[in-house]
Amino acid sequence: MALARRKLAKFKSELDKLDPNVASLTLDQHRKDYEQTLMGAESTLTIARLAIRRLCEEWPQSAPREIRKIKTGDLRLWLKQYETLSASTTNHMITTARRFFEAAVEAGTIAENPMAKLTYRKIPKLVKLTPTQEQFDAIVANLRSQKSNGHGAEDTADTVELAGRLGLGQAELAGICRKHIDLDTGVIKLFRRKTTSAFTIPIFPLAREIIVRRLANLSNDPETQLLPHYNFRKALEGACQRLNLPKFEPRALRRFHITQALRAGVDAPTVASWQGHRDGGALVLRTYGDEVRMDHSQRMAKLLAPTPAADNITPFKKEDAA
Image 1 (cartoon, one colour):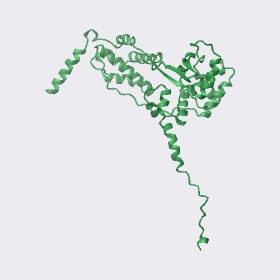
Image 2 (spheres, rainbow, N blue to C red):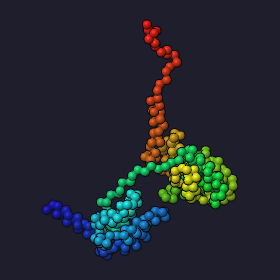
Image 3 (spheres, rainbow, N blue to C red):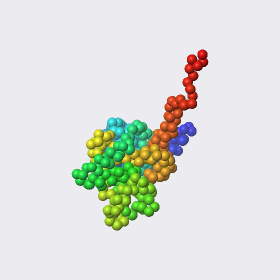
Image 4 (tube, rainbow, N blue to C red):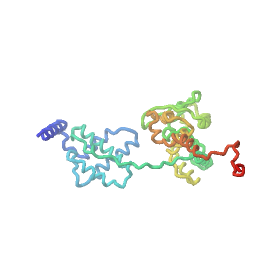
């Protein structure tokens, strides 16, 4: 009896949350309202719209389209057709669908989110390629030698080199204007659109010469961009192909900068601040923990080296004993 009373109380509570005016809302009707509420960067919106389109247009024919009738099992059936997609892509779809139905809860169409019990797929740990110092130098030199480059060999090489010297992504490099650079204090002020956050980095010694040279050839307009273009993916791929190197992606240059800093002894919280992180280095430690520990690990490895014989010790011979 106690269990029955609890279930009845829960049922009545759920009824109080529902709005009879939207009780029969379908996936397609809810889609029109929900898509108008989406916010974020254009890349984020594109991913969200794709997931919503798949949800509404590739919904199983055997499953109900009225939101109040949709169960967790129907959603499992919908996701089953995407088993061949990567775990990260599927997880983006789960996140979007969860928000999609949560909006229906807030609108009073349903009392509970049917996506709540579905879990994310485990993403395998991938080995992300990072160029060595020698490979990075070779890539930059190769790009400077491509005089037939339509964008200008120097511009392309400067952009790629600054990506590695400053540890910045393509969009962040594109946003740097004369007004953001202070040569006297040696800093660059940046803004990350994805997280809508501002942060400041030093003008690192190996990047300063490039920045000073480029500023000398630019107009004094504070809005003048430091770099004329920033999408260097194809140029980077071309250099890697000509040099018979792995196919490094633009983000590999950010990893190169972080790796070089950690190997030089820069602490993780400082590296994190240079990346605009506000977690005190937690993400850097999780992602680059091996690099952080490598210096100590190499010192420990030297303890296993054979001990050289001392010069002042004479080997003991059997004849001397006799």
